[in-house]
Image (cartoon, rainbow, N blue to C red):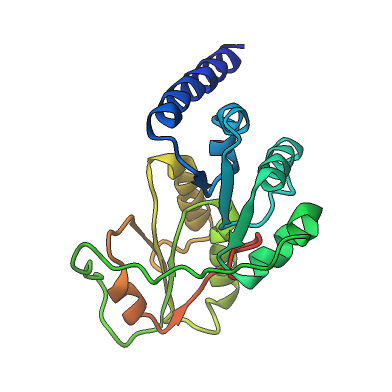
Length: 220
């Protein structure tokens, strides 16, 4: 009940603030990339009959009925829609008939420009280094890296697995991962490096880069 009340408060507050901004600046359209954001300003968008331009960066959230309902409202209300890849557009059109009626629009992301110098890996170039860089969540398949390392330890006795990533929001997952690594006696083979601002050299020093994600990634 407390969370419901808090969310309703934020929902009302966002609507009031956004309404004031619309009345002040009189925009011709709104550009969004997240259905959750739309949920917090939808009433204002509809009241002022604003055009809604959306850019989809993830596949439809089919695993959650509530999120799917929000996503469809967001997609159906759009005046124009675009996606960051052909895969995302096909997936979105599959789940929303109003998107199928729109022309296909795909705008790819630019490669990020690092704002900081590269972080230096604490291992030498030239070894059998298997590197993962990304979020430390189950959906990204990080536990499968441990399972693979366990199965391949005899075949590749010199292989080392480096996981780069992490945040305050994934501490429990990281703790569970460390526990699994210890249970499989892989402490000396699997290394968790934490979050790095610029992981370029981790990629450069990798013999293999892995992306074991178990959900529909934007680039397929």
